[in-house]
Image: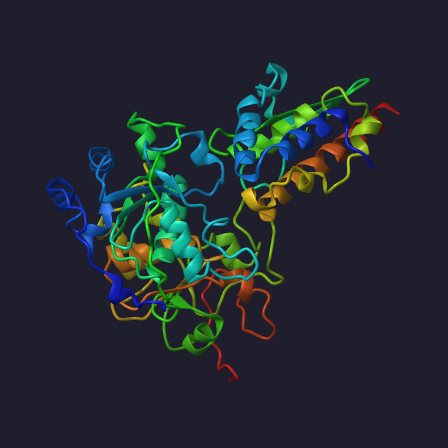
Length: 143
Length: 315
């Protein structure tokens, strides 16, 4: 079980700053969450809701040679947006095998337990689990 | 040595604005509410500290009222180890760091119709902080009115907040209080109808967590907390609130109401409405709420849309 290069970068970035500054870093990720491609913005039915998160967050995973995660969450749910952004950026371009090898407790590695609370980090673990399940489904559809 | 609330009250409170006094006059405690106009006019008032309290731990960082400080319901107000509120020492440190003194006028506002702001108000009330108010309409109304928001961290000097004992008897109910209350006094369950009936243990669109059984405490009336606010997040008129809580749910003055939800946050909102807007006395919030009751061994539970009868309880 190892992290993708992108997720390792994110973990390193969080670990490099002091605890109080990690919220600011999470905010930067939230600000950077890319808008949905038009093909999903116009087809909300394709997106899967993440029930583990307090705020509505929807995601969809594309798999070609690499994994592409698309996610959307409301502006007033920046924590959720930040989590989605870390995962979308950290998994972008990884191979399906690399993305599936990310351990389920990856959110704990960010060091946000005290700043954000384990309760809220559970939502991020839920997102990761759903992304990995969708990757398996996409692979099965192709087989 | 810690002090009781009455020993440390004092210091002059910020003035109540005449326009606000008229606007909120119909409520039992009009001084508990301020308007967005009032807050805009008091941003530089040294007597006032504006505090944002949201569900999302990062929402304050996205933008807040200029000069406002942040109190997070989870990381600040709850103890990290015990399932309880922070200790008197931790609260004193927390508020002092935020520039809040014992005599400061604290004005709380937040997201979701002040859901979490009223939770923070209730916790501060356990500690007997006297002058704590809610900005009617909360964060959303402030933004809807096009008022200024900033990401700039406020520069507020730390002050001394005394170590004050928390009063867990007057405004707070524990599970044994609820058991003793069954069949003798009214209960109000402020969760969604789906949680009340037992279809689910958490609010719709919220994660499943924390309770092994679904349903409600026998005899509880179901009045979802959000009924108390209008579309714009401001509180309904007194007449509307009376129709909902007195005529609709049969609550009465002096009725010693206990309110509960899932962890005591939504019921803080209803506690605020019943106590400060309708003036009911002896209202308590059972913060253990469904995440405790729904996992306790042997306590009575009713499923379905009807309140059900309070059973004779073995004590």
